[in-house]
View 1: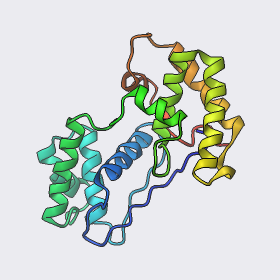
View 2: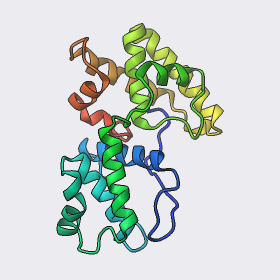
View 3: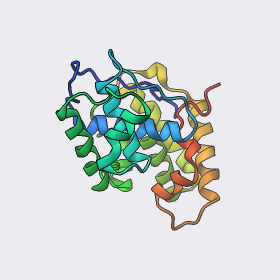
Length: 211
């Protein structure tokens, strides 16, 4: 939204695995969502086989390829050398189990939003998709006008808190708030955030309103 990073870097050794599995898994989910929403997403590593193939196999799982077939699918459709080690194959299975366990969103809507407003999320803040989810929750809680002001103030404070005040863009934050409000108004009040974002996949794109 007003402050969004379009790139994720996972610094792991060649043939290696993520040092923070859940963070890496959430980044893969977000990248897949961006691609599904129409954004160009690039995946790469030094050799383009092991680590790249592992990520692509995880994305294949998200696209509906059965867990037991994901690695073979990537080898058949990307390159035969993809996913180079037994540990990488095991990590793809772990990722599929993680998705099946519903850990794509480890915090509830209310928990995420409350912690975001209190600047208690730690790390480097929230992903673009989490930011959209916060906006959606605030719309439901407060209506458009108050939600917009809370998002502007919260995003400004978040950028200051994480040491990147230059990334705050009030105009862009307000534009995103309006888009999320309009999209929410087109759906039923009973829908979940997952249903909302599936109905509006373009909102997964962090660059949607970059102009």
